[in-house]
Image 1 (cartoon, rainbow, N blue to C red):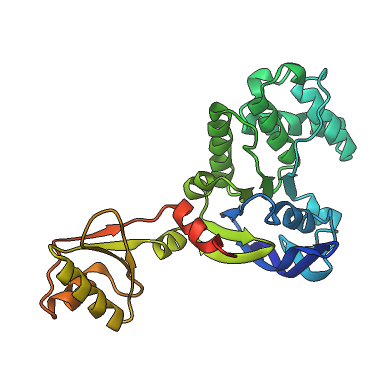
Image 2: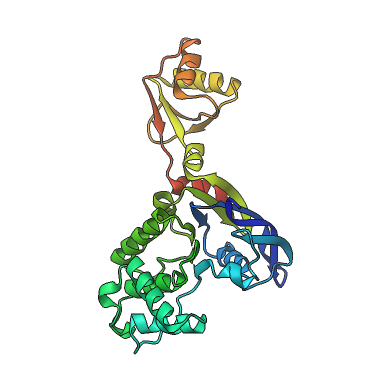
Length: 305
């Protein structure tokens, strides 16, 4: 019961095209889990499988320990898959009350749930305004409020900042942080790399229906870091490259400056590499760890896949 989402071997084709091709997912409770991939990589199809909107051809799914086809389980799950269609001439509160009625919530409980959800997304001050006058960012917040109507423990958001202006993007990112701090699990599907880097504890990278990475965000970033090793002469740089390659370390060329190597540290840290070079009489003029961006790691993972 420590997993909010657990999926094994998910497969789904559209015609002959594998939209989802053998995906395994494990999302710990209480985490913000980034589901990252370019458009067309299979993110939305995977979410539809998780929510029971599509059936997998193969594989199994558990949400909060239960089945996505179990109503009691789904009552603990809130989702924004596409922009929901609100009634423009009803207020935000009236729209949510209507959805509460459709979910068979008693009138008083539905009204209280609408108030609570609007408060969570900071729309209380405009709760009685008609949705027709809402900005795109406010409508997106209202969509998240709808997902929170039944106070779910798992919130699944598919591209929640799509189509928003910069102010709306900041608003929705702030909201996701608040959801995480309230103890909920957030499954965030996006192709916006900065969202994942800023918000997510863990990240999975999807490309052409397959996972190409899955783990802690910080570990993924460490995987992409490089060590910049600069020398005073090309002869020293060439000798250093041979020493490092003999020790099983990968080196990369750089065009940024002369006589400089980029080293993939692997299990060796910068001090160990410095000692390795010093033992051969090679003393770098500069040795600096270059931190990776999620963008560089993403491109490395998906290139040629």
